[in-house]
Length: 207
Image (cartoon, rainbow, N blue to C red; front, top):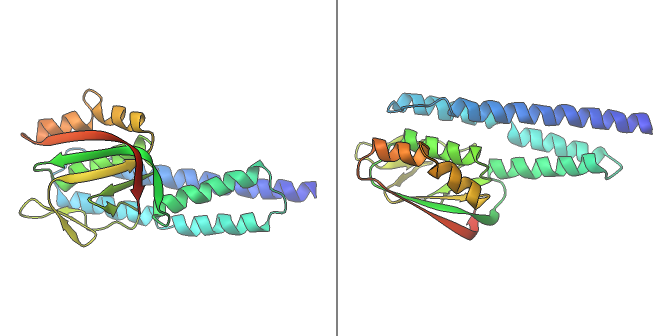
């Protein structure tokens, strides 16, 4: 019985290690976008992010199967449950409620900079993000700047103001975006006359 349990824990450790590598590679790839007026570069980065994260649901399913095969409910089981919930959130399978921030961007901005803003929020600990009511997940596609300046996302044409909702630790998210030389400062320096506002929220819902 003891040997069997050791085998379970060893398998779990390998699965969790794989998750960490997949997630790290996914967000590091998008983070390589720097100045970014090239639409093709943005499409490439979004495509890579989508392909890298395509296995998230399969990995979560594997963890569920492993969980079902375990007979004891110890700390290892709790760890698996937490990981399943985390990756279901990333894949957009679960609606999320919680505190966070709401950001309004009013003015001309291109899609590469929106990708940067979204990436910054995820790195600051956001559990879920939406743009004008459209949730950003590993299934998101078609992130592009149209000829008249609108943003095209998941089959919808978005116009300003662009409203980003992000669930997470509000103070941490706010400090990350508003830091001197941070993403807010860089956007303002790049797009003259753009308006950026940030509001902390006690409760947000992202479907």
